[in-house]
Length: 163
Image 1 (tube, rainbow, N blue to C red):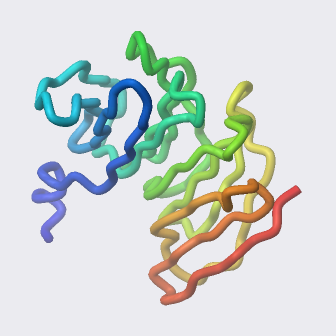
Image 2: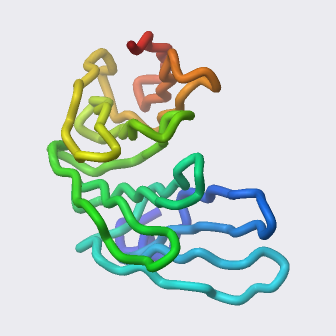
């Protein structure tokens, strides 16, 4: 795809199950939750200055995190749509974000070849993981929160131990 076409792409989808199931998609400069089955847009969250590449729900469903081509991660109140924090520290596009199972941390992968671990409450970067030789495309926590997995354009998947 050409860079100009990327505004039309929807790179990530996250689902929260509960009384209602919501689809959460990102494209262009906005993030949009939609009600599954109803096809009705509930909110449009705006604040990134460039394409949104990744989105996720916090485990309790109260917060959203988004990663963008603008090199930032934003934390949003899922009920009001208000941006609560902007996390800065990557030197290139943020391609993937994920909450830890307990909701206390957020991880991000970037085209700067790093993975960052953030405190979800303060927004402080706790650690930077280096080891990929090309872009980090995807990150996720293990179900017990003791490991992180990352996928990269260097054709590797790495498993990281975290404390």
